[in-house]
Length: 197
Image (tube, rainbow, N blue to C red; front, side, top):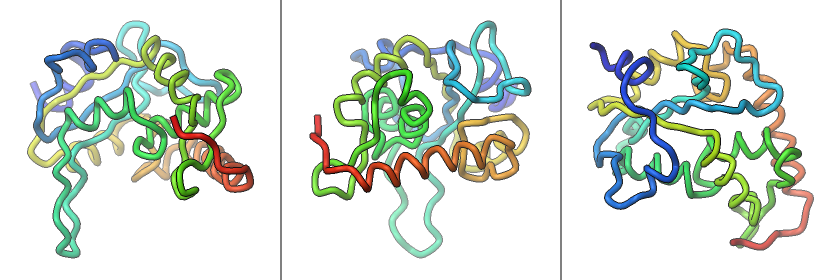
């Protein structure tokens, strides 16, 4: 079975509770992760998306990112760091959380705000509501891979992944999602700095 098949079509899907448990089941290795959802945030086209029972694949990500070509040190992140952060971090450090929060802002009653010095943007107290929504609706599966950026590129080219922006300009939802995130960031810049949680 190929890495693509292992990631997309087979293997266990893990919940937030399981991923945040100790010991954590996510390996401290390089790889690709795939996010499947029970409920779909409003407006996302899913007709061409891969389904696993009642779950829909909407996003893939990698850790670490591709090493820079400018001589800077490569990322020391691993699957464990990234998957756990998506489940419990904030919108500043997780593009998945930023996207989900922007799409669910009305439904969850949350809003992107500048926090701290004003350079960072999160959903403030709303991050907890977003985490609760993910606990109920998001499941993840991963596969280790020595060069995860290569598998990610292949998956984005072959699958309909409406929540991916990077390398996914061809997707019909790309301009919509890009616009929604842009409007949320512009609005956050206009508002006073919020409280960090």
